[in-house]
Length: 147
Image 1 (tube, one colour):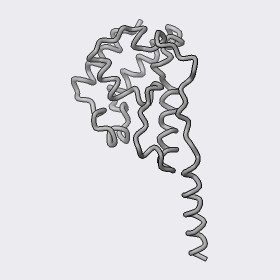
Image 2 (cartoon, one colour):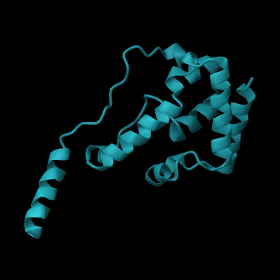
Image 3 (cartoon, one colour):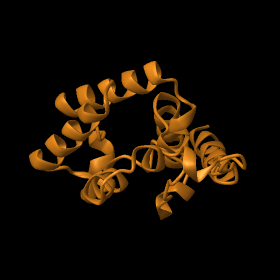
Image 4 (cartoon, one colour):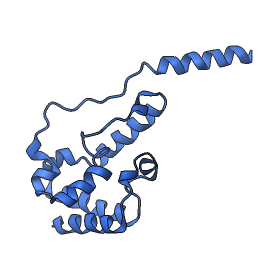
């Protein structure tokens, strides 16, 4: 009986490998609508954001090799989808002034509280582990954009 259960579980694990995750980028994206374009972000801030924010909060996601392996790929896709739902720097121009201001406020709060980038993301992406100076630079920049 145990052998049959293990075989069914193994078969299920093999079969879920063929279920793709959504890596599509919307066709209607416009470069001039991005956070970088709207705010003319300085290079040092853009560098920090590219390393620590954009994989989950834009459509510039880089999918490492392990995102091809289920069930890990489903966990990662869920994080990316949730990140984009909360904040997507690629559609920044679509946010109202009030919403953009609130997003900036949330960015500052998340950085202050050490909630972003997520700890599990930093474990797999050491380059996203921000120094205190980088955190302060990002917070200061986001604060300077607030209305």
